[in-house]
Length: 245
Image (cartoon, rainbow, N blue to C red):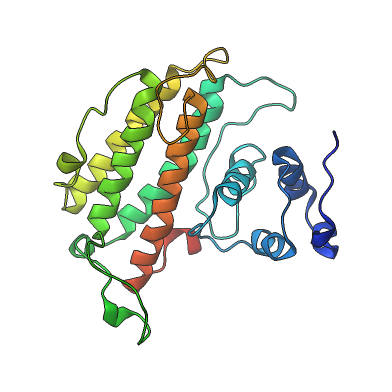
């Protein structure tokens, strides 16, 4: 059945590039005029995305080869149109795109700011926000690493190989970066076990994600969510995130 955009798109859809039209059609995702404008312009940051918005941007960068303005350039393998990719190759690119963005931000944050945590004085007076238990920058990276293990381990039918408590001990920059890299490496190992035949076989997963392919997607989504928060931490320290340069 052919994809038909909602009338609410108005003239906004007509102004989209053919590449973005392909993305919209591929995921059958009706977009509002406002979200079309936001996607077309690009912000270089992907915080506060819902699941469909996230998948649309990732499909644009990994499958169709586009990238939003300000996002770090990622060298991705190319394939001829109509050529069939191995399931593991396609998912590897999906994960690598997010890893490269996360690691660029982790490297950009100065070592002495890894203990940084947002405080009320940084925000507008009268903001009704609770700051109890807010993670430090290093804590956000440890949380991201834990999410990677949480979603990727079931792909290999394994328990988490390391506890979140252990990951939280990586508070210095070198250790925190190493912890995150290792968690992404674990993800690539999980991806290598996926075949076209097994990609959607039911496994014991988490949060409704119970196939290898959807668990990998959930892990990438979680990492991208944390990436958006890391962006804000970097900005609060007066720095320009790598993806916005």
